[in-house]
Length: 247
Image 1 (cartoon, rainbow, N blue to C red):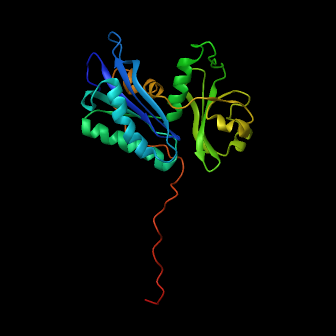
Image 2: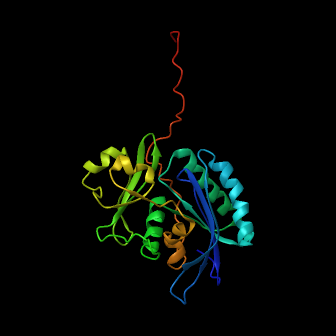
């Protein structure tokens, strides 16, 4: 359970994509109805390619310093559970688990696509060029490498109704559960392959916190951290050696 303090600081991080995102989120209780996210104290978004571990290790001290807090001041950790490529995703989940264990604070996991969808829903229409969420909902697409994408679909409230899945982008238009001609957000690199504009929407520390029910519904206990790999890792144990002589 989150400690019942006036303010709780959460470290939110995600390494499910080629961009590492991390931030310090301030959470405070509204009256007696539970917890809600109030503000971002510090945030960094850095392209990492395959250097998730090095990049994350450099960013954590930086956001703590920028927020003017120390690691012992944190009351919770939030981490994106993917889907994402095995190595990068594992870096974030293991780092969050290690921090939570060292600090004695709960670690909350959230689907990365849910965090993207929640942040988009929160921002929709709040800025002059903001994209409204259509009544039929929308889809979130991120890079799975190997010329594939991870994707999930959401209703107008930002609730996930399908996925996450992993497919080649050219397979999606033929699926009955794909949002044909609807709003798609996430990685614009898939616009051409999907035959529709994909609105840029990367993971965001505030989105991670907003999508984490344990931070917003009265401090519910954190569940187990189960990364969404969606496919087996490339590396596999070697097969046993076959005998070359009769036994």
